[in-house]
Length: 125
Image 1 (cartoon, rainbow, N blue to C red):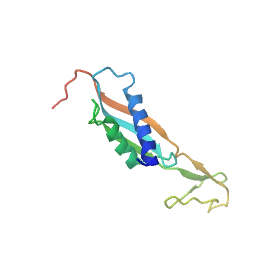
Image 2 (cartoon, helix red, strand yellow):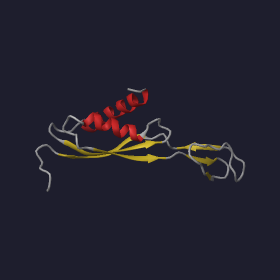
Image 3 (cartoon, helix red, strand yellow):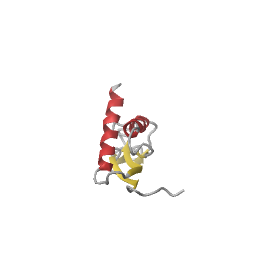
């Protein structure tokens, strides 16, 4: 398994453990929402794949991992303008005033929330 897959597998395991903490035995996760920033060194497709592997053989096998992708911004310290980026290209100076650009956000890696079915609860259907 490649280094990248090992990283996302560890993250998926920690996300699962975090969500399971405090749930009663027999409760099932249905949906987990996480924020992932583009600078967090996490590949969303690999994290989803790892999530599927982590929950595959347990009570949470049907749980869906939803990823809220958070882009990083470049904002001018002088005039406040947000610099447009194309892909991973980063500008060093503001096109409007020549001021220094600062990177904001994009480092997110947080569990935003989760939905679960309590132990003994029947699904509507």
